[in-house]
Amino acid sequence: MTGRLNASVEAASLCRRAESEGGFAAILHKGDSERGSLLLIIRERGQYVTCLERMLSLDGSYAWTRGGPAPSDGESELTDFIKRRIRFDEDSWLIELDIAQPERFIAETTASG
Image (cartoon, rainbow, N blue to C red; front, side, top):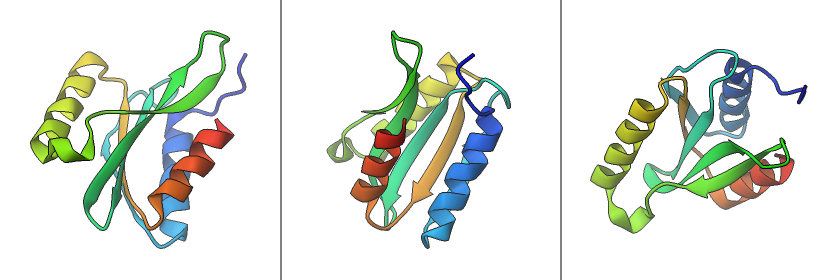
């Protein structure tokens, strides 16, 4: 047992965290409420910064990793990436966060696992 929270609880927690810091959060796709993977679309003032995905490591722990297209690839590439991810894993949660200081948020999130 990993002690991992349900995906729906984690999704709600991430949204509340972003909103408590003055940001905007939206769940764009609800996945499996218990076991769904989490994919975060991080923006700052509407501009795409990166994607974070919580992935299972070989040792059985979870870690947040950067992924997705580069910001220079444009919105159409991001849209295509999102569509492919949802098609590949319909149980995934897709959460968009528009936050100030996204690098700090990313550092804190990836450090906490």
